[in-house]
Image (cartoon, rainbow, N blue to C red; front, top):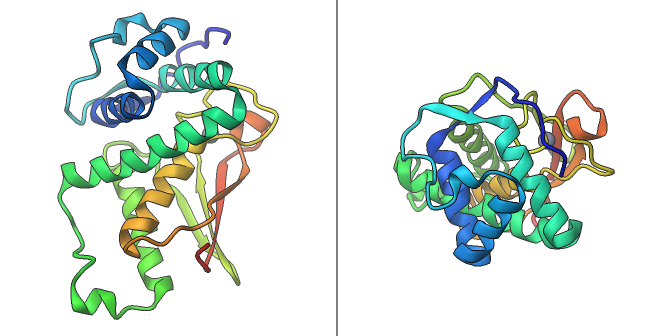
Amino acid sequence: MEPLPKSGLYYPNNLARIAFLALEDVMGSNGVNALLSLANKREYIGNYPPDNMENQIDFSDISTVIGTLDDMYGLRGSRVLAMRTGMAVFDETLKNIGEAVDVNDEGFLALPLIEKMRVGLSFVGISLTQSTKNVPIMKEESDHFSYAFQLCPVCWGRKTTEPSCHLLAGTLRGGLKWVTRGLNFNVTQVKAHSCGDDVCEFVIPFEPV
Ligand SMILES: [Zn+2]
């Protein structure tokens, strides 16, 4: 993984902290230490970002760590790890923010699936962007949602052969799973900055898996 120049765009400390802790859950602390060492981000070893919402983690740091994860585990292995990490990021963010919506409330349970999906996807947007201006663009087509990030910390400054911002896909899946009480949706990334597109865009079918 080539070193990336600083982006001047920042991700909140606590979201980066949650991502590191979630990676630790899936690959162990030795695994994360090896990853950070290989990524040349040794300053984070045993020294994760603090638990606050200040925007201090440069996008290039996140992107370098994820790019190194691809190098270490190959695209398939990295995909599984990043997807699980993304789902954990959503779960932990939710715990931190407190449940803004009671998904077990009778009124909520009675809502059509698509309405629940709207809530879950908006909530991911809010939790990822509450302290940045990076508001995702959500659209509804005939049978799916499209969800696009104009700025992406996952692939910032990198080039990939296929869209691979699995951390974001996992976060979206985590949000949908929460709001539907356990349903899985096939979140597919169709565009990526790292592939030369102007957004990182995901497609989410209305039907669960
Ligand atoms: Zn991306």
